[in-house]
Image (cartoon, rainbow, N blue to C red; front, top):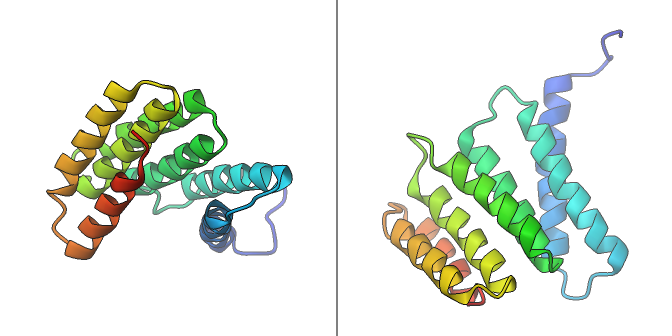
Length: 155
């Protein structure tokens, strides 16, 4: 296979961010069509793929990608897939050196997944763990954002 005539690293950087942001625009859209739901999921998975191809891929970036995909599966009413990606987010966030912000969000995604599955006690436990890790987030703005998202998780 011959080398492409463009900067592959730059392309992965661009597509990782572009796909993540485009998926987020669809997450925020109040009335998505079925096609937009599918596109939202494809964009999130594409973003996660492109991150894994970047030399600066990290446990943090993987956790964020898995978290977004979990959130999308929750929006699509697929609790098993939401749980799967929530667990992947938590596994990435649980590595040494990864800050509490990422664990708080991983637990937020798991709280949503379990609530959707009807496991309200487990959802409440995950939300409590998310709040516990959020309390350890040093940046006040980051802490505020994660606590606000945890407050919207249906329990």
